[in-house]
Every structure is written in C-alpha cells, then in structure tokens.
Image 1: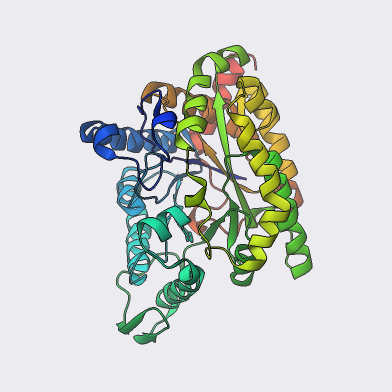
Image 2: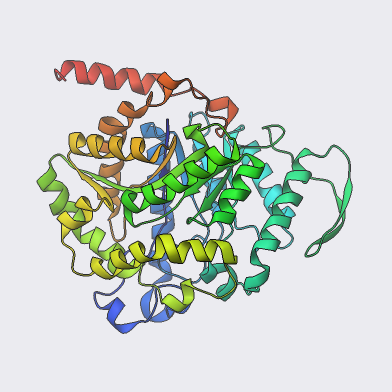
Length: 425
C-alpha cells in the first residue's frame, strides 16, 4: 500500500485561552491579535523541511492542501508549497500529493490544470492531482461561492480540466459558469492522459457518485477516528459493490492522526499536549460556518443527518473531557510505541479496506524537532510493515503515478533491514 505524510501547517502558538475568547479558528479569527508574520514564515519553512524530511525518510508521498482565513491550516496556495516540494524531492521515489487546489474557487479553473501540469513536469511525473470541492468555510464564506452553485461549479471545473489535459486540439469552452474562447494548455503533464486524480470527501453520497463515475480515488478526510471512518467506508464499499465496480482497496484513501515514541508511556508524555491543542483550538469552528445551507445536496444531507452526524456530534461533544487514553481508545489518534502503532494501524487499514493512507504526523502545536522524531520513527519502524498489505490479493494501484508504481527506496529499505539485523530484531 502507499502511505503519504499529510501536513495542515496550523499556527502552532495560539494563546492558551483561545477557544474561550474567540468564536472560531476559521473565517474570522483576528490575525493581528493572534499571529506574528515572522513566526508564520518560520512555520512555512519548518513545514517544507518536515515534508522534505519525510520524503527522504522513505514516505511514499507528501501531501499538502488548501484553506483560507484560519489558523487550523494556512496554505492558501498549496501549489506554491507543492512547487518547492517537487523541486526539493527530485530524485526520490516520492509522490507529490496535492490534496489540493480547490476547483470552484479557482476562476477560471484552467489555472489548476496549468499549475498541476507545471508540478508534474517539475517533479518528473510524480504528481497526484487532488481535486477538492472545498469546505463551506473556505468556498462559501471566505471566497464567496454561492452555496447552491458550489457543486455545479465543481463538476464543470473538473470536466474543463480533464478535457484540457486530454485534448490535442484547441477548443472553446462555453459552460454555465466558465466561458473561455481558446483553451490550449501549456504545459501538459508528463503523465498521460492525466495524473491520477484523488477526490477528498466527508461522506457525501454525491462525492461517492462522482468519484465512481470518473474512476477517481475517493479519500475520506476526518479527524474523528477510524471507528467513524468505518461507518463511512462500509457505506462506500457497499456503494461500490452496487455500482458494479471492483472492490480494489486502492480506489479509497483515509486520513489518520499518528504519533510514535519509544514507549507507550513516552508517547503520552510527549504528544498529548499537542493532541489536546489540535482538538481544542484547531478544530474550534463555529457550527454555523460548517453547516452553510445549500452546500450539500439534499440526498447527501439527509444521509449525513441520519447516519453520520449523530455519532460525530456525540464524539465532538465528548472530546472536551477526554484524556489521552480516550483519544487512543476511540482511535482519533493511533499512538504509542512502534509495535503498538503497527498493530493499531494494521487493524485500521484492514477494517477500512484502504490502499492509500495519509498520516498526519505533525499535529497542532508540535515543535519542529518533535515532528522530525515522529516522522523518523514512523518511517523506520512502522512504514516498512505496510508495503505488501494488499499484494497477496493481486490488486493494482491505478491511482498512483505510473513512474512510482511498485517502487520503494531500495537503498533505504536495505539499510533498515541491515540495521534491524544488527539489533537482533
């Protein structure tokens, strides 16, 4: 299977009483009261260093994303980050996973096709093209996309991008939302007819339909644990079966928070304050901002209200009183010694049936050195055990850059094997 390091790049030093003084981390937190531009610059560079370190440590991919007007994850342009990472990781068998540029808020969306083409060229054909719809906070409240138009704009943007990548002729685009007299894409991606496409989602039925229709990889992104994740993914695999698609585990991805230390006790000591910071501050979002009317289609909204929101709201309302053990027991965070993390993560991967896993190895207020330690322990002690998870079933990962399929960094793997042999493992 393929495991990528996901990075939100949150503001790491919000005040201790942030969630009591401010109504939301997203949309309206006052920058000049809370942030220092100098520190922001430091965080950007730390984030680039952490992701580059992960690539050199042997991670299969490194993953960035787009958000606006918030302290939870402030990469307003993931492709700026991706360009630096693509150049820094040339020569490594590591995918550049752009998870990614939000389609409806990029006007015209041909800009995404062009910039992804640039990234694929810079990286030598290592791009994974994430195509997110965008959150209500970002798209509707910060960037002014009318909620009822949100998904229609997304579908049209997607179709324009795919045609631009595939077409060998100049064409005009006369859509409902975008009108372009001449589309003649320069540059083109190295990967033909296009890079693999991943579609992030939060359980909407319409997103399952869309991913299946276009044979894209569906990725469930949530911070509320793989137990909730199982409920969503069980529904997804049932949908896949009814649609007549093959149950290839690589057509699905999942995001999981993971922290690794030398022992279970040390993991709690080192990481719990940062887990607490993430759930108290980074996820402190006003409910009205998350539930903008019209953003979800009726069928998906009805399914969420009936099948997902009751469990999710119960978990959200409980988190404020949780201790470290509660986060681990509820699988919000997979944490502990390398052996503990391997066991928990293997159970999660198998029960979710996912072939593309994203792991959040920087969480909340984690300092730079602790993040590097987490990356190092995960890459050395956990990652190698997941290389062949789905191989025995003969599945092919059709949603991974062709140049990297089946590749791992052989030198690093051999060095680790020698090191473990010397240590008697």
